Length: 320
Image (cartoon, rainbow, N blue to C red; front, side, top):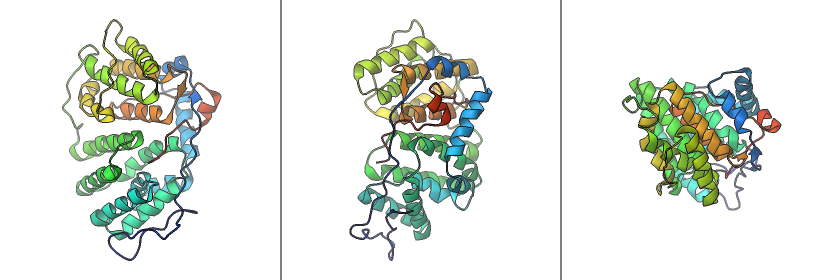
């Protein structure tokens, strides 16, 4: 990719990049886009032409080169690893070293180069691209899949923090590949009602409200709007968990145990949280896509603003 740092070369442990080597600049984030909650809610559970059109718009915006690699079993692994490569040189060096040790230098260099090229991908297209890649990954052996999942964890931990995209990618991939290997979800199936799953629902809504709102008062207001939609009459305090995104890991079994109509009601409540301030960000959409993926339900078309339907990128904090 033009302007990308060359991969470290000449030794198993990567050397520092040449002095003055340019760091790939991530695609510039754009401002939040407006959203009409009534239109989005109307599309939940209704696979209409609008739903398919929204998906097609996303696919059209992803460069053909990336889509082709995502569908090839020989190219998909470095592409997925590249999605997690940091723009910070010291972190990227550590990630490269991890891949050299786990997969060899050739694949590590390929992931390095993919990471440079993928910095130009609009932030809201990263998760859809990874979802395209899942089909090719599924054709790998169980042993390879276990190794890939371990490498993803190591790449994410290289900078000592987990951002929204990293959490979403790892959650979707782990759920998808676990089901491929074991032919069942990562958790036992336990039937739940909205009432019995009230606390996991509240945790999910609180995390989403915190991600989408820097102002605690606005976050609580969005949380209340979502809670009222799915659990009217329930009084649960707004308490975003201190552990942040990782607090969602224990809630998946209960939420996946909901019936289809209850899952649709839950997705409606998530849309209410996202749309409470009238805008949506890439991080909010990524979390919504992840919830729908884990719960095996359709992603609603997040259209409301004409540009949103046409695929205008939402706000993103970018890869760290």
